[in-house]
Image (spheres, rainbow, N blue to C red):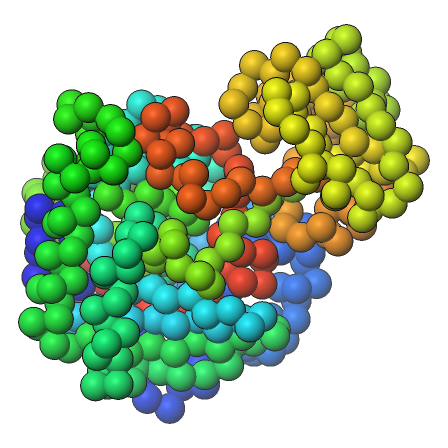
Length: 439
């Protein structure tokens, strides 16, 4: 392992499945996807069976609050140790360059470990590695249960750099043809293709680190974002997996007085991507409320008073276009119920983004007991189908521009939770690489 403390990077020992493993069954999607679609995970289980798979190493969040949850906490930790002991997982020290192709788009990433000492998910953080959304502390305990007794970590964490000139990935692309192939296969459930390359050239590695060091120079940072030199440099913004990285941080803070600073749990394996990658799109994250006991329009009117208006629209398409074309200063979002489609517009909003305006209402509504449960879903069809069912309400949001992300986080702090998604559900990161987090 090699450390580059100036940018909080470790070149880690990465574990990959041994040669001959069926990678299409090994690699499964992030645990926090398809949480309202248990049939997806039933299909995964059927396809994987008893074959070596990351499915046996994770707790899909669709099982939270069920009998399956406790059993899987124990079984995942047992499988981790089994895969380490029986040679299923094989170690390789070095960066891995990843290409994910799905729906005609290709995203590029690099696997490396980040120093949790340089990460702070708390509000107002000025750390080198920073959350992009508010951390919900109630979401950490199930993840902590898994990681506290875990021998390995499997990241679905995607961390962004702001590199408009493509200096970091441009270095790899020039030499890609000389890099040894790590894996190359089709992902399950029509989720595209995954290819990995070993970055085994130390000179190339050092050049890549030099780019990161350049991006993190305070003078360059201050000029780029128009801020004072006193502002903390943001080099790595957590795009996906905020709560997974917060879990790793929480456990490290608890563990380090016992083990000292030179311990594998100090670091977390992540995939780095460039926010300007042409294959990366920011998608909105919609909301669905289940078990509602009150007409959502009445609830919204009670919360916002005369500041909210509703416009009935004919169908999903008209709702989407109306929300996307809405102009400031008001905040608009779509409302889907069994009565049909509406667009709600809030004048005089107290937050910067429509998602923040909507979330303040949803949090308050849930506290009244007039709505039973919330889920955060991807895809226009999913929110419309679920929202139209009896006892449900769906809320459609337009997306934010990815080019605004870094400056918004630097100036305003973490965004409201679940503001954006890096792609739709089936485009999310699939587990592939692992890393040992015990001595």
